[in-house]
Structure formats: C-alpha cells, structure tokens
Length: 225
Image 1 (cartoon, rainbow, N blue to C red):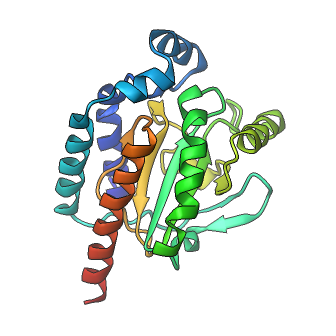
Image 2: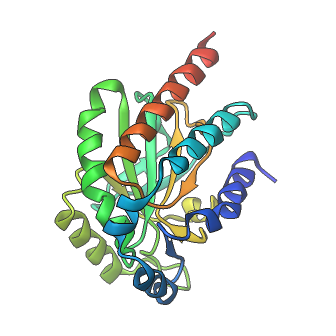
C-alpha cells in the first residue's frame, strides 16, 4: 500500500469526527445532514476544542514519514492541463475537495477565496477539486462541469479549480466518505500534517493556514538541509 493511500485511509477513519460540518458522499445523505443543522449556525457554534485537536493532529502528522502525492495529470474546470508541478513555487498548497451538492462546501468558498489572496504573498495557494464531475461509468459529465462552474462563479472562488481525472480517482479523491475534505502539500508535493474532513469558519481557517504554513516551512527547510 502506498504512503498516499495510507494517508487517505487516515482521513476516512476521521470522517465521524466531522459529521456536523461535512456532507456525506451522496446527495441523499447530505440532505439529511443539512436538515440537522444549517451550515452557518453550526460553524459559529463550534468550540475552540476542535482547533486545539487539529493542532495536535497536525503535530502528530509531522512526526510520520513524508508522504508524496506523486505524479498526476488533470484539468481545470476551464480545460487547462495541470500536473504535480502545480505545487512548485508555493510553500503551502491547500487542496480543498468539494462537491456541487454540498452546501457546507459552497458556504466556505468566499472564505477560502479571501484567504487565498491574503496569504499569496506568504507562498500559500488554495486549489479546489470538485469530485462529482464524472458519471458512474467514469465519463465526464458536461452538465456537472457546467454546474460546478456556476457555483464557483457565484461563490467568487478565485482560486484554481480542478476536475477529477483517472489519476485523481486512483488517488482516492472520488471515494472520500464526505466533503469538504482538505489536504495540505509543500512545494515538492509532500503532504503536510494530516488532512481533515469538514468545513470551518473564517477564524478557524485563518488559524489552520497559520499552523500548516509554519509546518510546511519547517518541512521544506528540513528537506533542503
């Protein structure tokens, strides 16, 4: 089993911890979750304990062996070809996996967009991956791609948005138990800390950016030594 697959399994096992801020992997299940608690109220009511747990989790992830995502090819929603070099030139890349049916995902897009601009000078970029642009037989669904483009435009998500490809499917991005799911990578495509499931409010996202940026800087420094 590859290091990346082990990392994806670790995120899968954490799914239950994010039940109140994530959409299940199918629209029907997501509807049930949404009826339980509106995104805005749930995010506002989250305690600081969640942030503390994340910091601890990130620190634990820093002690494990480095996990590299490896080579892959995909396209943006606009059809531009992208590969693993997307990480190059950035200290930290925040990869946010979302779906068109997920209200939690859409709600946090403006936050991620604003932080993408604010942290750009620090070497941070946000990259979205929409994981429901393919049909059950693995073919691209033009209607879903069009819907994703509309959602991105309405959410003012000014960061790069990727579609699924065979490579990303093999990496597990199409089989996550819930969305949004977020992963962090340094400039060499090495995973930083541990990924997590669930949405965040602006304060929590800002603290997350700061925590993982520091980890990425330390990780890149160790790599260069």
